[in-house]
Length: 489
Image 1 (cartoon, rainbow, N blue to C red):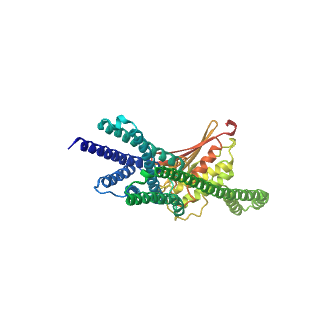
Image 2 (cartoon, helix red, strand yellow; image 1 turned 30 degrees about the vertical axis):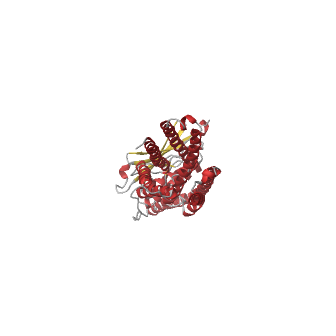
Image 3 (cartoon, rainbow, N blue to C red; image 1 turned 90 degrees about the horizontal axis):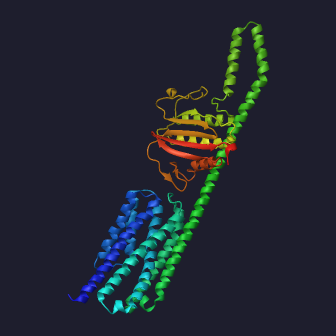
């Protein structure tokens, strides 16, 4: 083997090492790309490894394969494995697969132009070209190392921008959203295929690469890639705005429903107090009848009349007393619903009188917190027992709680100018915050769910407070903090 053949082999070795390192870096970047979208560390790592494992053999085969389809095969293998490992958000994974495929192509196009510029600069240095061939090999190796770094940094930057704009990472797409979001990637892929077809046809017809005789072709291609990336960014930004708009509409609809519930509760309170005023109006008549029965020495009839009178007054007396008639009604309604689902609601709640907290806001907090606690209590089931007696106030000790029923606990207390309300329910599993707000994902199905905690946080923040969510001793604990109005800054 002469020296030139040996140098040629080293040139080929440098190119292969560069390509293998690039494929490994792409697998790692794919891992970094999918992690923020809810993929576990293990699943993301296996997906990145699958991409590299598919690409390396296809690169090393002795015959030339179309690069467009080779990269598509590697990306498809990674995201199919990701879906097999975590069977959720299929539509989002499909869209992310297209994104990763195009990002890699765009970064490759930018890197190739950088390589061309560096190689042309190297050829203009006589000491590298006309002197020692080993020196030329060293310079070429440095160019390939720089190109590897440029491609890695370029892909990292492209992924970072995408992840910054694509905020709703933990939410899947519906079919209509998927079709809408795939329009731009598919058009970009069509342009990609057009460039590949043009260059391969030119090579087959003339035996030369098109960029050798038409250098502007490479710059047109890079310009198309950059414009394609900009189109993807704009599409993601509009998609995010649409999602935010829909979320606000759903939150407003949920809040409107809660307002309607509060109006219903207020109507119930007004009806209750109308009955109480009626009873007070009839007190004089009742006393006159009792006096007549006693004066006629009819103690039996007087006792029966007194029992009837007491029964009527008990029916309109609130079973739960919290210090405010509206929250009395709210808690009574939630207690009835909990009992229907086989859940025991134990309450130590008192309304924060004198703190400047609106009863409507407290009702919003109570309704959302108790609904979430009861609905997410493991083992809740409809209570088929019949009980025709009026509901009694819950006992504050757990001794009177039926052992077969899971318990939801509600309590509140005040520390100086701070009012705290805590709701806890049995919980099995781990707590995983979702989205920008760090709140857990709703376990209820349907687009109308998942906004209760967000509304609670917004309500608490009006009083310079917030929510705290934790899991403690097998219970999901939600704590709401509010500050007294006179202490706000």
